[in-house]
Length: 262
Image (cartoon, rainbow, N blue to C red):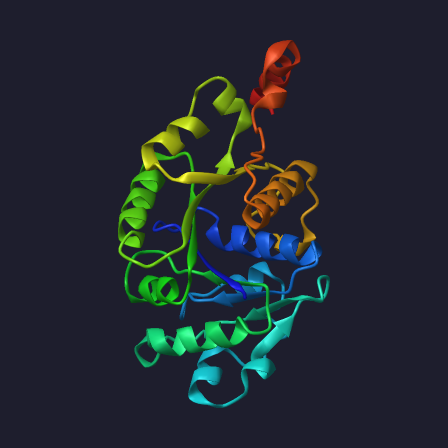
């Protein structure tokens, strides 16, 4: 039976869609069949992050309207054959999509896939509720910023009203040099405040631009962090990437000083 997981944040701009894409790719690389749904109606960009925007013939609205079969709307990833994406619509047709429509699609995908990931829209309005209603687990993405943490706290309180099997925390865009010198909120502080099981920490990488497709990124530290995240999700382990390790000790001080000068 598939694990149906909504990836949410409450606040936009925390890297939720990119995390969802990278996690899907990593799970597929480990041999699992993965489907990712873009639930951001009208404001979608998962297709851009996945570098498939020119391959889409049908979207989620076409499936709901009966213009195509679900299988026809799925776009297979070029690099990972066991990874498929169901794109959202660029037209704002939010009023014509209800939670039962989404649940029917997710349940159907659950018959053929090991993981169904739902890339949730920002906020806690109807789009958020539709996505969560169709899932049985939730990953909450947060960054080490007060506004993001507050929004994540609100999302977690709302998620408590849904019948979910598990809720997990992913802390994204963590600067190891800042954490080592306590210039930002630390991972443990965030976990203690949100009182949610930590499943992954993903570092900020200065060599990666926001517009770069997720499947073209070459970063050893980022790949290691996403690998641990995927393994923790599947195996129930708690191996968290240590973003500040290389910035501690004598050589760490040198690295921090060099980074400040760049």
